[in-house]
Image (cartoon, rainbow, N blue to C red):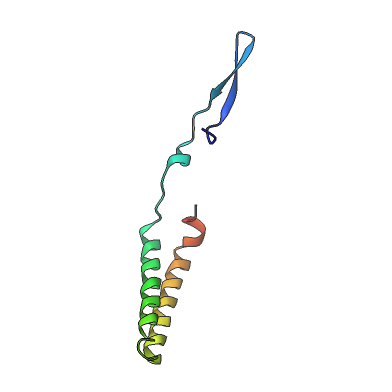
Length: 88
């Protein structure tokens, strides 16, 4: 009940507090755009490949490939404006 706003309504000389209607934005769920999720997936795949590159011993060429994949994911995220438009 704490997030329900109240407003004062004039009626017959007395004021009565009534709950105001909540906006649609307050209860609406926004899960982001598909291009943002593609960028996140590419970045996660890059980090997973980078982690695998160190098991059981460091494989540096695979690590740098993973760094490139994660960088491509970051470029996708920046070009899709994920941090400015898909943020809550």
